[in-house]
Length: 129
Ligand SMILES: [Cu+2]
Image (tube, rainbow, N blue to C red; front, side):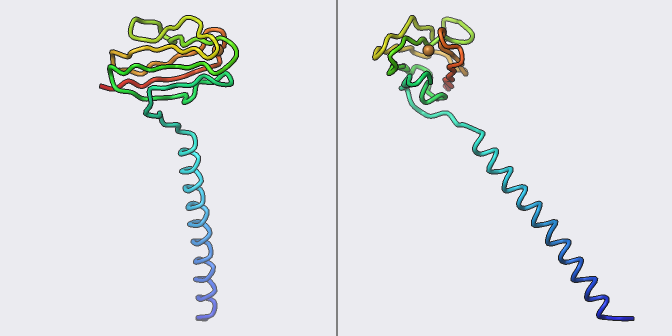
């Protein structure tokens, strides 16, 4: 029996294991990075700026009873219109350039909203008790 052959076989096995482990480690670290960049967490603030046809920050979180103010920094009118209209959700008239709109959230929940003239503009307010 040749010990040289046995060693060669073991070396080959070690290489195969190393490659498999290396690939799976590389994979998992990549997928972790992808999930981190895709999950956008809500910002704790009560001020939203409307600029370049976007709500900034797009997602905010506040406590029940907080008044949130949206300020329009664009030259065109925008609105803050709840996706699901209710007395507990924001619904502004046109917010003119450099004007603002405020709404007090009295009930916990996740409120998604958009801009009426520009339905591709989206925002979210997470209200917690
Ligand atoms: Cu708009």
